[in-house]
Structure formats: C-alpha cells, structure tokens
Image 1: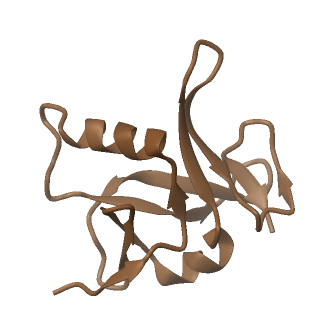
Image 2: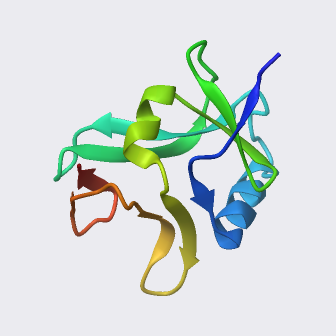
Length: 114
C-alpha cells in the first residue's frame, strides 16, 4: 500500500482538468500513473518531466487537489513550490511550469537551471 504525501507542487484547475481529460481518453493505460519530475538536458540544464508512466519502487505518491501523481523524492528539491498550469489558446497550447527554484529558464519554458 502506498503512503500518500501532500503535494510539493500545485496544479491549477486548468491543469487538473486537462490531466483528468487525458485519463479518460479511449485507450488510456490505467496501469500508468501521472509522473512529474526532472531529467538532465535542455537548453538550461534540466528539463521538466510530465507524463504517464509505471510507478517505480523509489517513487513517492503525492496528492494534489485530490489527484495523485508519482515522483522520485530526490526531484522535490528542484520542484518544491512549482505550479503547473494548462493553456489552451491559439498562440500557446500546453502545460506550463512556474518554478520559484529556477535561476534561469529558456524560451521554450520546459528547461531550467537552479
């Protein structure tokens, strides 16, 4: 049984709505969990990870506004206090990340450094 921990990340209502919409799409693999994290790379050194993936033994389960997601606990250092939003406009469509820990970000909005 997983222990659910309060989320170090905030998801806006728009982000939660879009994630839940994706989870009820035909063909969605219900064995997958929402994952958020970071990986090396991108223009500024680290890139955000947001997607559906298998839960790993080292993952912690977090709750954000009633929506559970998994994250490697070592990523919390980089993501604590971050807000994930969803934009559905003509000029910008997709998830955005507002991270108070980022000392530098790039123009694409998915890469940062600390």
